[in-house]
Length: 166
Image (cartoon, rainbow, N blue to C red; front, side):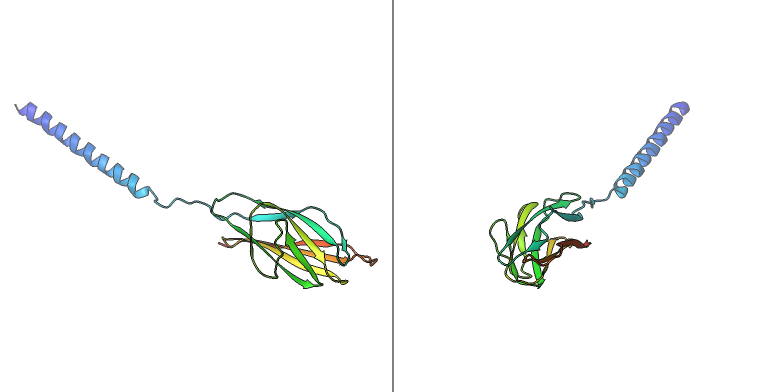
């Protein structure tokens, strides 16, 4: 009987050790889990433009073809566009017919879009276009057109800024 009691004690001890080990492993697994998944929401982006004329005469319209290129996709990202003209007189329209007011934001519905700048003056035309997302990133384009009425000069288009938030 003594041998049977020893075997039972050994089995019970092994069972207790296995149970304690199982509880420890389970606790370790749950303690190492992170409930917060890291989902990237903010992606840097650029805006590319096609070549365009270097001069614009009063009453003339220049087409600016643009394409927004983001490094990734997040379904909750919204893009807006605005412009500010700091030299010359003119108007900027979107391909959907909306005429921009300076510094007002407009929802950008497509990644490929066209802007139409119409000269309303005989001087040099300088303006910026800013595309922003709702996550703090933006891309700024500067456009410099010379008068197209016989004055020489080239159109300058520069990508001034590309900044990200968050």
